[in-house]
Image (cartoon, rainbow, N blue to C red; front, side):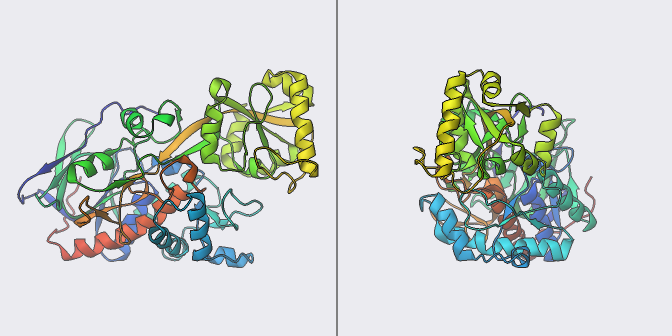
Length: 483
């Protein structure tokens, strides 16, 4: 993955101007949020132009597991899962300690199931409900994914739908400048091509779907210093353009210290190890052979717990039963192929692989067995009684904590319209996904599994519908002469 070494994001204010090409709606970023916004705009009968910095649609979505939380879906009903907007809202607010806007959360939860069923019915995307384990913080099974269970499969499905719909995507197009009237109305963008040429394109409405600032070390040091030096497992193009443009425009930015981490990225292989292992009975040990946290608290805050350990590493320990479960996930299969998954025939071999004292590892496993039998309470608060004990031979993976993506950003309303610092709304500026403030509260511990794609999918659709309405009614005229 190439580093992005050049970052430029500015707003040029001025009077109305003529553009060589104008379109009703411009969408910056072709990850899940941008692709879905384009489909929603198309569904409303309005033409949109997608501008993507990479050679093909990708973004953080392609690097994720592709799991989308949604409530009240036909896939849940098919297996007898009773879920509701109220239940999902409660789960999110509980995780954030109620430090996020409940009305905003309710909008995203209400839209979640409808968005997935719309993508299925209108554009042929196939989703499955993940069964067999419940992700931390969710009261019921509500994670949905493409059959391949990867973010790449989700992006590929959405990209194919966009192409089939005849929506214009211009790749290798970096947007560095927005053109705005003195009052903040966006009238166009400037695109930089790989050869250095620049193009100005007018628009009736603009959707920012360019994710957050996880790939910008300077912004991380300013806004989230605790994770600034961690492994970054997101897309390098997430440079914080939305934050920079928002600051220049006088937009409101909230929860800039929030982010999604993950406490189980294999090193040096750089492969994501599914948290299903942990939820179904796995444990994590540090290099001394000790457990150090409640592994069920959530994989996001577990990133910080792992980074606090000696050497900033831990060992994810499980057994053959959990190995077979993990093999259902493509990321894990790739990790095994790469040699990340090791085997230890007994506790002594486990200690030798970790480099920890045998007696210490044996004592940790003994305490673990007592917790499983209900003979004592785990001091970290985890309940071990719901799953079988781990049995040798053990499987183990050396892991570290990583930053996946940021969760703070532009504050938007129920229509995905960006809000001003003075409480007003921008006329024609919308945001979704990582460019917008999420529903994870102010810090890492507020992230509930899937919150990133929840924002991308739901706000993508909402922003597309809103932008289509403004773009249709505005003065922009779509022209097909786009290179």
